[in-house]
Image 1 (tube, rainbow, N blue to C red):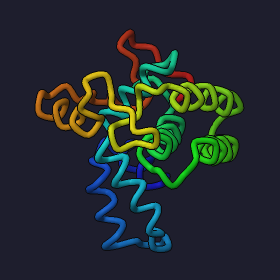
Image 2 (tube, rainbow, N blue to C red):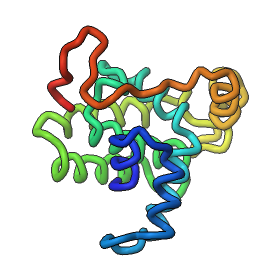
Image 3 (tube, rainbow, N blue to C red):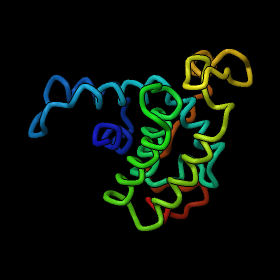
Image 4 (cartoon, one colour):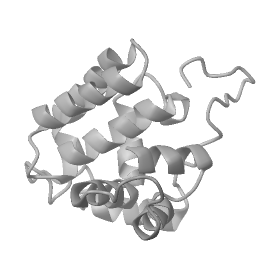
Length: 171
């Protein structure tokens, strides 16, 4: 969570910050192997995860608090891409993080979004838990590559920035 949060706040690439933490952990303890797997997975599937979260939320990913969107990315990655973690476990862990790291309204919001993701058969890639291909029949990995090649990656503005000039109260 810390690595994704740091990269997101600084507007840096998730993989770059991860590699920095692996080489020089500083005062932090070395990252556990599963944390490294999560960061790499979220980085690899960021475009699909962002699109999926946008599709299942009343808030766009850019308007979500940095903590909330990274909790959602982690849990959505576990739900969709990690066959070893049951969806209910991923959601419970996300709620625990939200209760400890975010504001009082976040757990309900995160639960609603992740429940929608977990119950949507169209979000699982060909290699996902239920083996269902996405709407294109190609799976999310192919769509991530297509989005990156086409330049349709959704860039995130500075935290708290709103196009209409108002600050995001949740950020």
